[in-house]
Length: 238
Image (cartoon, rainbow, N blue to C red; front, top):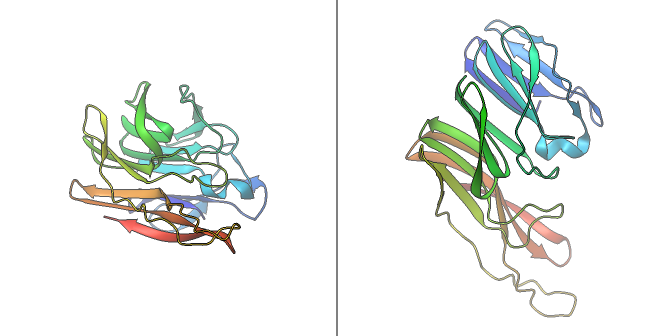
């Protein structure tokens, strides 16, 4: 299992994959008494998609969303009876980027991918440009929506110039909120026998917002290592 979302004690969804490699999406639902497998949207999972597995959110028994970026950016909505695909606007999507989603109500849903955010008001999507690249989003209130990621575009082999990026929607616009930085030059020796001097690359991958003064984010700090290429350390911000 890779993701879980709950609107209450009798409405919990979980998604994952039944096996390694390429396969269909496994979808489970908990009704307060037991878990049952439910029909899933047409989303094919592949082992290389692990870090950008579909995002899952739910606000009630008749409102759940799955956002997938495995082969193309797609939105699937649960209306209490069936899953249906919902058209998404153009978000300048890069297939190598992961999507994050959060929801406060059926008419208040957020999706982030790359340096764009989209908001669903129950009728249509509105796309906005973010001040940095985002991988995750969480809402504590309609005017307290947080997104985290990095200042540099994520690359297949990692970004060599990214620092942690935290952004907040205040009901009117998205603004960067200063986050701790680490620009300590690496003391590792490169192939020329000289100090490498590169700075850590930091990327945040998950955020949970409980209130304006209680927001948590996790991610990784990647540093140069001559023997192993690069080494990663898990970091937490509050």
